Amino acid sequence: MPPYLAGREAEQQEFQRLLKQETILDNMVLTGLRGVGKTVLLERLKPTAIKEGWLWVGTDLSETISVSEANLATRIITDLSVVTSALTLNAGTSEQVGFTATPSPILQPMNYAFLNRKYEETPGLVVDKLKAVLEFVWSILKQTDRKGIIFAYDEAQNLSDNAPKEQYPLSVLLDLFQSIQRKGVPFMLVLVGLPTLFPKLVEARTYAERMFRILSLSQLNDKDRRDAIVKPVQDAKCPIKFSDASVEIIADLSGGYPYFIQFIGREVFDVWIQRLTAGVETAIPVEEITRKLDTDFFTGRWARVTDRQREMMYVISNLESCDGEFSVQEIVEESAVVLSKGFGNSHVNQILVALTNQGLVYKNRHGKYSFAVPLMAGFIRRQYD
Image (cartoon, rainbow, N blue to C red; front, side, top):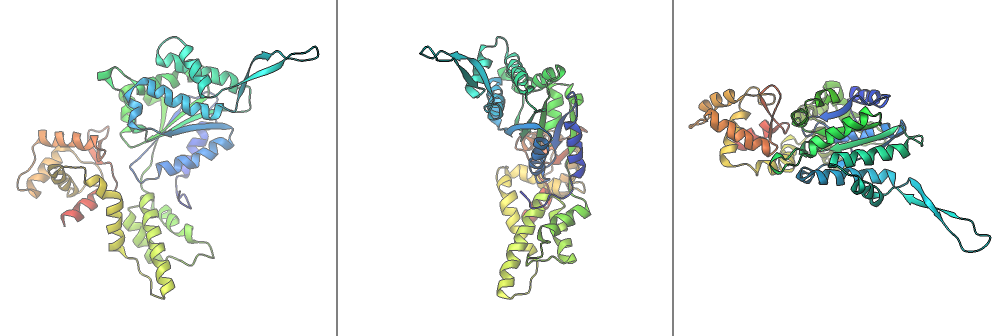
């Protein structure tokens, strides 16, 4: 977690608005490229929700969730049991031996075993069983001072339907929350993931457009970049102080992405601390930090692609719009300039599908593509240089 969260005030205010809903009409999708601070912001929203009287459950979603609807049910019940296990039900009384003995209540905790038994005993489909469990939990929880439960799931782009195996976990999740929210159950869904997340939701259920409030995170503006760099070292006892020139170098090198600001800022801090101790004049080792960033962040992803895929990614990195959106036709035309043997439309489409499956590019709703990893184009050019 960074020592200071720069920007994102608008997103936090919007979340606070969602928490004040009497009936849950809007859930939240938090989306953006890797490195924009989605997970950090999600962790900052958690104490806000708890302070307002909400319970918070959730975790990171892996690809195994999409294997079956039963896996999704296990995930939800497991997460729910973490906060319900502190609640108990009166399951009857136990008779005591003796003339003066008084019956004592039998208390049943609402743990995973209890919720799972409720799930198994309910007839119907997976979604029917989950509805019964969530509605039952709320019937008990509303007797407390809690306002509801936030179900927060990071890496939600991993969740999808599996039509060939007739398993639809994503559709079940959307149907589940839409149904219980219509009945007035204040359980809110917060999904966090890459830009491919929201198109997946709409593809699974068209009503998802009306079900979610979409918050898209991008790079920090100039002021927030500066705050993210300067404020963590503002303490009077901190031996490191960044000059305006140093702040500008770090801000430019990071591209405004919070992950890179934190990565570069820490590297500069560590290097300067050592040089101050040795009495050496400080300077930002841009080349060395860039090389380390390449190794730590980009190289693992680059190693997964084939030579031909690398060639096409190099073509993309030479486009003027490489850090934004690009089309199949732009790639085809640029490949004829950059390579001795260019790409055809069908070949470009095939490679883009493969790169999308690997999480390196994504197709947006305008029919164009973008790199899913920020500053990827600069890394690719450095490899070929």
